[in-house]
Length: 398
Image (cartoon, rainbow, N blue to C red; front, side, top):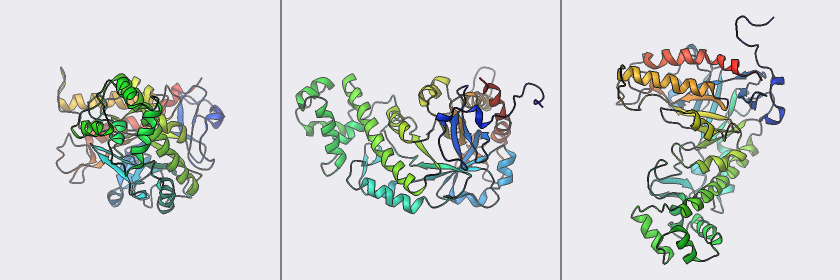
């Protein structure tokens, strides 16, 4: 019998393009329907859209599964732990590979591991062996999200500060990334520093001169430099995700691997990650546009999970005919509904379970206030959107 009204029948596994399915049957998978929509697919082969919240391990004791379920939340993104008994929904394990290697690049706001270090790959396998034991047999585990908090750029895109290539070229020679970066750029310019300087429209009589520019926070920004920086950043990301993905796969071949596109960071990170992970986790701002989602998903070819999302914290400005609170919620509704409707989105995770110290209701970012009460300015609207996310299926038929 057909469902009442205009609600389409539930999606079946036969509605998916089999060559897009990623993951292991009996665990959470991801795939694209014939109409072009990406969905997470549960261990029961039923598609679902992740409506989630991010949790620190210390917060788990304060979370009531019944409360989360009442708000339509079906997914937790957990840093450093597993869900407590009573949680029947899906979850994502966020883990850090930072302890994997001592050679961390920390310069001018960038914080990433030196992925060219000879010990990086072995260290990743050692770290995965330590960290990837929780949830190995849990079919509710969507997958692993490594190092979502790495700083791949000194500043958000659009601001003029030294970028990853310039920073690697300015490291001490004890870093493998220093030598890899210089080999990379000189190979592209005939091995000639003068030719490199001309292509970058910069005065570079020697390597030390570039280090001095970086020390003074002077960013290279010519078209020639940006071209090389994009290529190098993509290769850096490929090295990072290749080692991390292989290390996780060696411990857990069943669950998905989720690559983090840094907030405000270079798009080349996601480009380097996309072939090596099952889906991308993107941290957006308070306002999300269709073109942004198109770009993150590589025009719909890569499934995207929005993490760290919140419509709070985007400023308290009012709009004509609206109070600041009304404006915040109207903007938030439009942004999140755009995510639900976008064919490449497979879900989202709200940024904070609890208000942070200093948050001012009703503009705090938590779903729970410091006194333990519901932040209804958020939870009422989220509940409405979460429980209505099934309408996404109305656009799922060819």
